[in-house]
Length: 141
Image 1: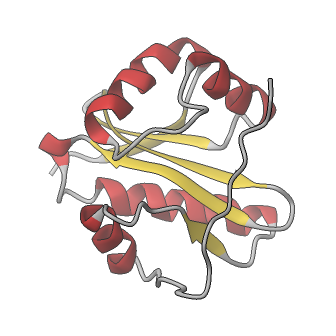
Image 2: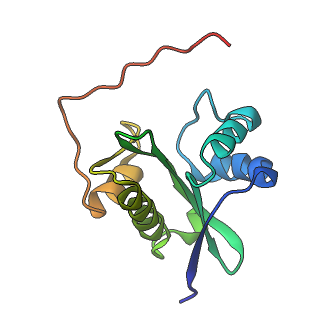
């Protein structure tokens, strides 16, 4: 099996990342645009992790840390490359980043209807907390 290489994203890759998420991720967010991803990379250049197989983008995860909590977003694996350890390698890299920063617990955002994503997170040892629901309010901008 080819070795999975994990690295951080570069600003010049943003258009390719958005196209990748269109085909590999489940759902979209208000910040899924060039400006939103550019702000993420500028603010925390180590947060957006990419997995590559033979130099080809195979998956992504955003490992955001605010100094208090560790948040995981946008775990996405190319549909043609699933079940090869890409998601697990990304999660492990994100968890290593959090440990290095002093994080103590990670949480993952997963859509209710995303059974594939729920299975991936459960397989990595994450569990659903039924008592929580996400509340959102778009900010004017």
